[in-house]
Image (cartoon, rainbow, N blue to C red; front, side, top):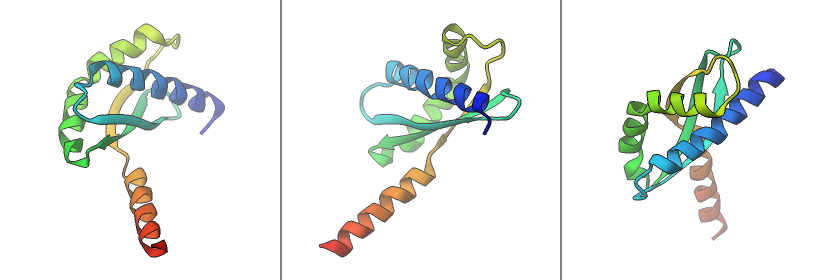
Amino acid sequence: MSERQDKVAGLVREHAAAFIQRESNGTSLISVTRATVSPDLKQGTIYITCLPTSSEESALNFFKRKRSELRDFLKDRMTQRSIPFIDIEIDVGEKHRQKIDDLLREDIH
């Protein structure tokens, strides 16, 4: 990613985390792990994790329904002329990392 993409992705991640914290009902812990944006800065993806994992699907569906509100939230807080259209996904890379950590802990004990 270019420096500009990194900067925009960082801002999207930061503001999306604030939005999710504001909109979350508090029954599960939802974290924004990373964000990416396309080279033309028109599309972006926010990756989240959710604890407990049984709440992942409902949290993902809830925030997918809130995408337009999230975009408005980003418009109010970011200075870019064009704000990326956002998609939200579960961060499976983070889930795999946690699984590997659990397996390594089992081997040690």
